[in-house]
Image (cartoon, rainbow, N blue to C red; front, side, top):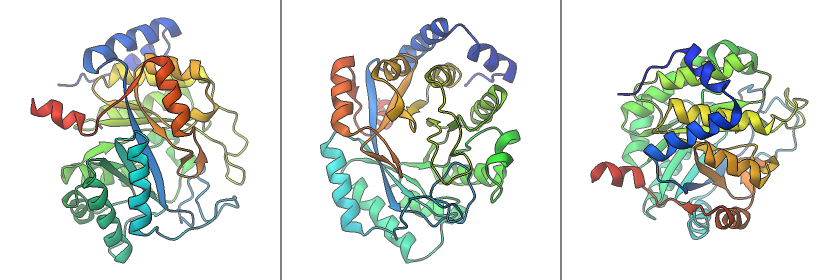
Length: 323
């Protein structure tokens, strides 16, 4: 059974001397995960822009004037080709993102179900992030073979209203519950560097820890400020904050896959190495992270070679459970 941490205990961990924190996180990581193994995921924006939400960080919101070009839902052959290329480049998970407020029961959703089936047939884990889901829609995705549903809580419940007003914190938690009820694994984390306090970061982790069961996957994103969004002038989040957040997440959620996500392009290889040491066990590879820049596959494979890391095979967690 997972330990129930208090906010004070999580804060105490977060505030430890940095090298001591990384050392402790590295020990916890090795108790629960194979050292040097990192899952490589590819993220594809299958429907871009035009979203009705007002998430302050997101260039895909229709109300903000950004350089994002709106694209309708991609075709099945386009997505199949992208997943084939991603697998050939070393990715074991394909994540499909659509800029929707919520899933609607229409031909577009039927096409997404076909995409899930097609990628699943390639022996790749498939993850979707499509906005809010009903119980019935979650079940349809699960029946199509969806391995994981991503729905980030973004930040603490207290700070959430400063970033998003078009849906509530409970809306987010309800969608996570629907995905869980359908038998899918859950991918849920948040973003740092949006102007939140350290207490907000702790509050976000506290919410995730208290989900039953906890998310199998926790993305830690550093804000990528985009011109035209309300957060365009936010200072870049310090590397050390990312390392602290990764390490703290690893200690309080020892079994989770901790994803070093957005913001990685601005991090040096040395900084990323510290994050891997501190328990990051997954990255998104490929030149785009939905609509923001990301390191290319070949850059990452070179980094893996230098650091002695190896890509994790698909469905490793299920195979581990079956043993």
